[in-house]
Image 1 (cartoon, rainbow, N blue to C red):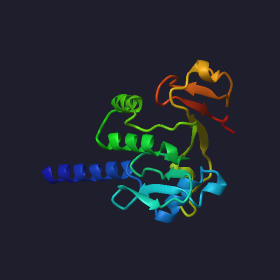
Image 2 (image 1 turned 90 degrees about the vertical axis):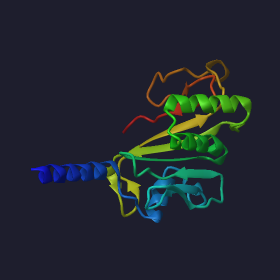
Image 3 (image 1 turned 135 degrees about the vertical axis):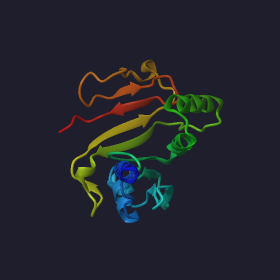
Image 4 (image 1 turned 120 degrees about the horizontal axis):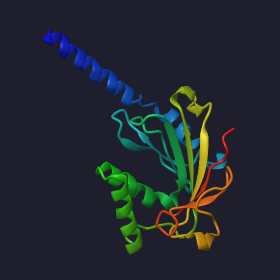
Amino acid sequence: MKKLIITGLVLSASIIGFAQNKKVLPKEIQIKMATQVAPEEDREGAKVWGYNEEGEMVVLQEGTNNIVCLADNPNKEGIKVSCYGKQLEPFMKRGRDLKAEGKATMELREIREKEAKSGELRMPEAPSMLYVLTGSEKDLDIETGMLRKSDIRYVIYTPFATLESTGLPAKPHKPGMPWLMDPGTHRAHIMVTPPKE
């Protein structure tokens, strides 16, 4: 009976582990997945961060242009890839580093806010673009890295912008309407989410 219980626990742990960790895809597929959200003319020269076989974040492709892309995290459910202008990299990298240290979301925000205000964390001086593509694993073609069905959103970071300085509302009044999220903070950004088809 004891052997049966131990065997059951080991099998359950294996199944849970498999469900929580997706397979790390080949480098070329990760690059195609990550860059599909960038403007077409910027894809080939983008710097791409992805994952090695151990699930560690590594550079998969050195960049030659202004775009940085992040491959889908195999340790998280669903598909999410993003690309952004390299002037956002200090902000994005600091967030990744703080998450790796185990900082909770609100603590991470407070740390970056303090560092941005002090000048320790360099923020973009001009509006900076972020492209985000999300979808489901069932809609992923693992041969090409393309999502058959996905949702996209555009985020324009404009640190410390306010509702007054931009003339934007604090929420969208119609589908696809731009609006300002986190106004007055280091992470103020204009959200544009096209209506779902």
